[in-house]
Length: 468
Image (cartoon, rainbow, N blue to C red; front, top):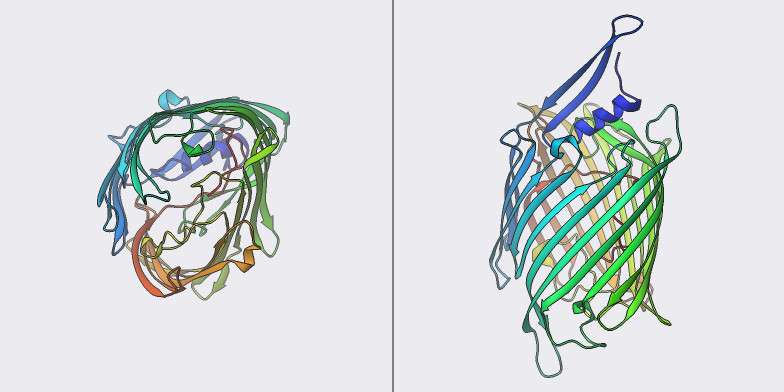
């Protein structure tokens, strides 16, 4: 008997989420009226991998082991290069301890020295991973040294060393409000509280009105959430045939809290709502809305509205080929942001990025069609894909459709062996008919692609609505 639902189905999902695990199944064999045997069958992966992300002027390559010494821990080393940066080469190291003593607590250490930003950090965290998780929390400690560039009427791009230390601590408690006999993941109320401290030891000269991003700050946030989630099993979505757990449900979250800043005190308010499920004859649809900002006396600061829509279609079949369409829509607008706070388009290759592409409002749309081919060469499977990217970037003072358009289109191949922990190997060519400079260009890319995960409808650390 296959135990695909309820508590055993949840245990299967947790095992499949391990980065070095290909699949996990749990079976029950009835012995008599009082006894059963439980069989757990797993299939693991070769854990050592290589991730290339290579461009003509910038890129990186990562070597990792996601089951280091067979302990279930991960070791990652990454090298960066950028011909146009003042720091041409960079390095990142990270070591993670996973599920320490079966407590679902993860911890790690990292060092990062890339493009004039040096960071050293320690962290430990536990999420609401299972339906029985009553407590969650985390501690993140980071020391950062970086170079900041400032300009005025008398000088341009003056280099200023900046050093600061960040402490981020949070805890949460989950309460079951309504049990569902058929599904383990019932309606839950989640209460969380967090403290974020950012203090500078070296920076430029600041005052009440200038360089507000470099002011000392202490932020306390509390959140209350309603969470309902469960999972479908699927495949040929972001992977090439392994079982993928697709979350469906909803999350409603309100976040409030005071912030003590170096020259003022203010209050944060934020609200997020998200939902996702399959729609008959259409496919999977996920949508989210986030609204947040600060109230400083009679003034509003760092307000943001964020909308995300992600969708993928049902599978279409033509002979031995299988097709799926993907749509990703993102809209972000910020008001009363601090000096130096901007967003940019993230679909352009590094070679096509420009300092001209900064704004306080953006709309991005990505359409992609993927054809999973019948090719299977010693476990290596091939998918072909074509994509079309549209980005609109500008000021919050104008209607978004009247701002600057940037386009990209292209095609490529994805090659993956689900028996290996290697990321999907991706070859593509992209054509940008409209660039910030007014020109156009082609980009050839070689990169690795993670098996993407859909948003899970559970609250964790209370945080601001992202402006990016």
